[in-house]
Image (tube, rainbow, N blue to C red; front, side):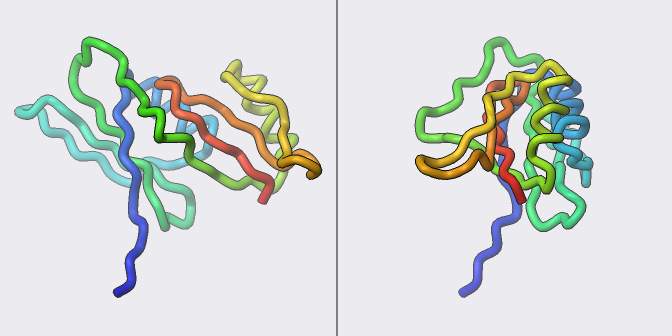
Length: 126
């Protein structure tokens, strides 16, 4: 059997703030949206230009408390050709961004940027 990853789902507190982050900071595009007003939630799917994998943002209407990100979850990873330019871009957006990092004994090749709900995105030199 062959399996193919199609999406990962995260719950968000503020759909518009999350969409702004994923569209502006990571250049993802909205591929589809499903509203379920009777059940009080909306699903928005975002992908890169190749559309091989999507992030599903689940917005439950009027959440009372922020969601807890489990300690077993670490991050999502995206690649970019110009790591330094991307790093500067995210810093200039005022986002929470780490310094450029590398594995022990290696040159810097990644950093992390945090979305509005606290999910970490690893940006790796492509």
